Image (cartoon, rainbow, N blue to C red; front, side, top):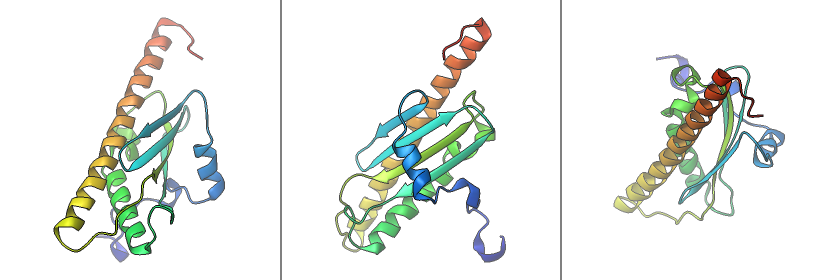
Length: 159
């Protein structure tokens, strides 16, 4: 275990922190942009060719979750889903589109959970929705990568 218990934490360069970087992803349009929506979350990704990298950002607005305790819970759940996703390990999922920048954001009000079983079911529901969106994004990346690889092999240009 590393100092401070950060053995499994993400490098700082993998996180989107500046509002301008969030806006760049959220306002992106056209080729290489993937938009997915689940029950609780929206995911928008920008896929580009270039150096192998993955960057992510999380937004949980006060409009959808008034209490900071609940916003932090949602962000912890999202970070855990991202940590276990293949998307954050680009070496394990080679593709023609190597650079991935994605933003996950809450799209619906979170009810103030009570203790016990209700809180656990909410956590499970949020986690399943985040995992579902991330696996859909990975499938979309693989499909696009396969199409680009086939076009490259045949000498066609898809751009």
